[in-house]
Image 1 (spheres, rainbow, N blue to C red):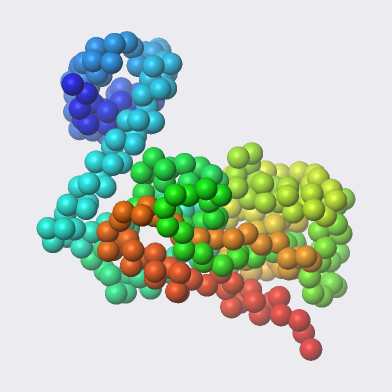
Image 2 (image 1 turned 120 degrees about the horizontal axis):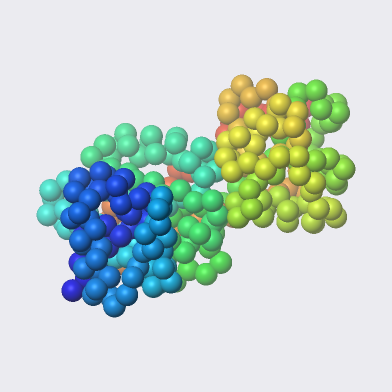
Amino acid sequence: MVTLRQLEYLVTVVDLGSFTRAAAELHVSQPALSHQIAVLEQDVGGALLDRLPRAVRLTPAGRMLLPHARASLAEAERARVAARRATGIEGGEIHLATVYSATIGFLPGLLRQWRQNHANVRLRLYEFRHGDDMADAMNRGAADLAVGPTPPRWSGLIHPLGEEELVVVTSPDDPLSSSTGPINLALLSERAWVHYGPGHGLAEVLDQACAKAGFSPAVAVRTEQTASAPLLASAGIGPALVPASIIPPHFNGLIFATAPPTRRPLAVYHHRSTDPITTEFARFMAQEICLMPPHVAELLAPTA
């Protein structure tokens, strides 16, 4: 019979790429780890891992099993936390799925507010490059709730949070420095942009916004780190399109709203069957979220 321990061993070996590192992480001997993987392979009827000289690689059977293994482990953790909440052993733990831009944008302030009144509730973040990846993870039961781009299809509950505005960032000495008010992206059609890595959610947002303005953005540099985009833009590498919420105070680059506005709807969503702590957290998010930081709103406000 396949056990959760065996699935945990398999996932850890895959994630760390090594039996040696996995054994150290799991605090078991390497022979014991290898034995449990062998028993698992015997139970499923075939090899799950190819043992290469310096790495391990999933076999086709292993690739089929891995997402189910992750889902089983996630569900077991959810069950453990739910039981501890119900018995009053602890305040609980919320598993929150989100996208990179939320973690460096509006979430820190919200989580600080939440913790002021719920200090005994732990939070665990699962961060994703794209809203679709996050929605897929939610469907697999990887987290209690998610906050980010509104999913196109969701069978559970969705609490709209409003629209997140994206702004253009350039260097302080950019030719646009004399411009006031929102700008049309077509003005930047000849520029090479600070873009995002393929598969990053904001790469899709930028491409779609530029397409509506009638051009495809040339690329000066691609970054995987959302927080790097405004820094690269302010350094003069090229313009960037970023969520207004990630612009830090005292930012030294130029910031422009776009005309027409570039926005994406955000929501917090979760499964229909959930616990009171998760429900309360979702309600708190919907009531307290601020998607436009005051210091950015002030910079974007028209001057008299």
